Image (tube, rainbow, N blue to C red; front, side, top):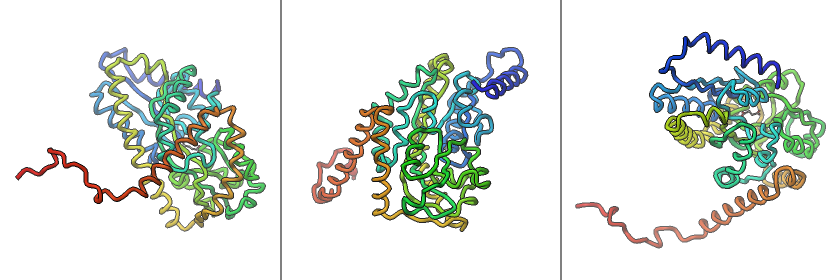
Length: 362
Ligand code: SIN
């Protein structure tokens, strides 16, 4: 456990004990929700929305303090802070669970594994999502929800079009072994770095480029220090909302239920706005004129995909073959369903029975 995390935890504990006079029964329960991105991102907005719902529905029994932009802790520190109870809630990206020892979360980092959000949600919201959350129990963590961000795009100060363009580039990645292998497969040098340090590292040339969904890139102003962006959708970035297990288990059952429902509604909201936020961010990057945006053509996407596919095989053992196969199955099912829908006769050709409650009263 890092000394800085322990010291910050002690400072927080002291501040809290001075701020609150001797135990008052009516004092609200405080949930410190720490995260590393800007408030105007899918995660940032959803954290604020959860706060609103939880406080309204908690009727004075709960107060949610949201700390955005790594104000309290950087990526790795926040996990440790949650485990020792210095904060109660986080939403780390799925790529940041590997260092905890739960490597199966790296399923979501595999390049090009989810061709669309639908197949991704099937995996997250199904048995695999449950299995992943169960793995957190042993770490003193409870998983509450999966939040979305979006597909990642590549950026650098040179165009990234062919595989050769990556050769020798230092690319910042999150702390995931899969992402490390992905960058190596492209011929680049991966550099793990906390999210809060990426802008200055790009500015100072410590790294040459990076990958992120548009909302993260734009809200951290990375476009100001990256002349080129390739819309490659080569991988996914999403989140697990997690709480300290002991804190959660010790809550009065009715309050836990209220918070659980607030989280469910915040999750619906989050998934609804994620794509909009990323689309808006892309439009803003284009309007800023700082960065040339290149959409990777389908034929080159196939070439990237072929170069990156060996990464799936390489991580079969660490992630779990069953999980990877389930992700392939979900993608195939969605594709089949879409194909069936596309060839099905239009609804108006096959009228169904009119339900009594749909018949307009005269
Ligand atoms: C986040 O979205 O939470 C940060 C992602 C990153 O570290 O790149």
